[in-house]
Image 1 (tube, rainbow, N blue to C red):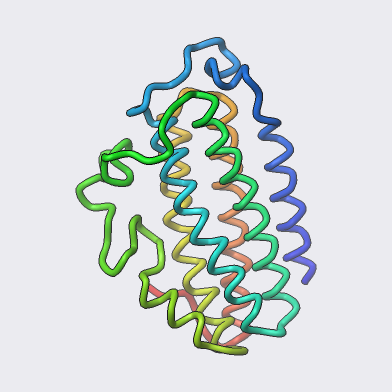
Image 2: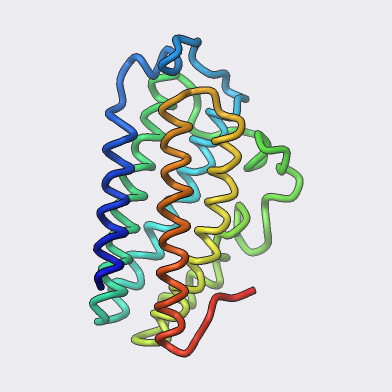
Length: 207
C-alpha cells in the first residue's frame, strides 16, 4: 500500500509537470517552432497513446469492480485517473494543432512499425490486450481477476513505455516530450510494483 501511494504521488507530479494545455502549444513547443504536421511523430504519438491509454482505463475500471482487494483497487484507480487525464491532454493538443484524432495510417507508423503494430483479436498495438482477454477479465473475480489484471497491465505498460520512448526520441514539441518521459518513469515504477504484487499472489508476469 505504501508503494501504491508513492506511485500515485509520482503520477500526479507527472501531470503537474506537463503543465496546462495552452495555445502556445498549438503553435509549437517552447522553442517557438510551428505546430507539428499530421504525419509527424508528435501527432502520431498523441493519437496512438490516446487509444493505448483508453484501454488501460477500461481494464482498470473492470478489475476495480471484480475484487475487494484494497491495494489492487487503489492501483487500478490511480492508473485509470492518471491515464484518463493524460489522454485528455493528448487529444487536447491535437485539437489545438487542428489535426485529426484518427488517421488512415496503421498505428505506430510514425515509429516505422505500422506493418507490425496491429496484432490479432483486436490488439491494435504491442502490449494491448485482445478482445478475448478483455472479455475474460470481466468474468473473473477475486485473486484470479487481480492476477490477470496485473499481468495484462504489465504487458500494457511495456508496450506503452516503448511508444513513449519513441516520442522522447522523435517528438519535437517540448511539453509532449516531457510528458512522454514522465510516462516512461511512472510506468517503469508501476511495473516493478506490479511484479511484487504478482509475487505476493504466487504469480508472475507473462512472457
